Image 1 (tube, rainbow, N blue to C red):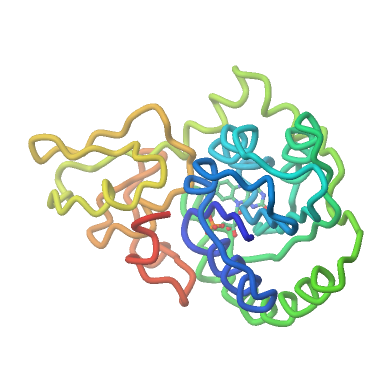
Image 2: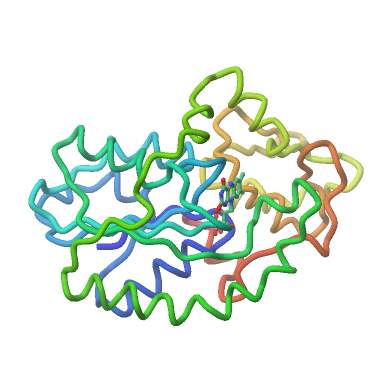
Length: 252
Ligand SMILES: Cc1cc2nc3c(=O)[nH]c(=O)nc-3n(C[C@H](O)[C@H](O)[C@H](O)COP(=O)(O)O)c2cc1C
């Protein structure tokens, strides 16, 4: 079973490739917390690095997963560059439930956070050329039941993100807000927000307090009406994995 969390689709593509190559079913982490997976013998977690760590949603939901202590558990991270504490944190959360991870690895993708600080993710699409070969390697490792913890170490800089005053400051530029002048009240952001954190009320887009900063709403808004850091969103900077359609994200 492959369990995934994705913002713009990079981690969904990795999840799909692994599911196909390993002949495993897959589901989002939101569905997985509703299931009893204690009889499942091979479990993979696929999610991105956000702000030097696992996404807030993943950190909240992993402790609610019901997994077997004997399962072969693996983690595959998607990231712009580094896993930082994305494996380390989840490994600790799983360990607290008596579940050990056997294997972890990473796949690099365009950095979807770039949009917030004027680095165009679309200038990094060269990373997409490498990912197919990388997926072959990782799937082969998992298929043969390999035990290897790559990129699982602790990143001290990432630990600073646990200090509330610092993390609040760091997350602020990634908090999406709707620009009322550009918004046409189509409701797409409400439909695709993985956290169900966006509501359309009286044609106004309201963003709640459960944001996991995935920037999905910002990258997919066809009117560039969702903005981060108080700056206009440029169409040229909007990115999503070319194999993902917005409909793929409705339920995940
Ligand atoms: C808010 C935010 C913060 C990010 N922080 C990091 C980071 O600290 N390190 C890194 O290598 N990539 C970082 N990224 C890039 C993502 O990990 C990368 O683009 C990933 O493939 C996105 O996957 P997704 O499309 O499944 O959300 C960040 C992306 C976002 C949206």
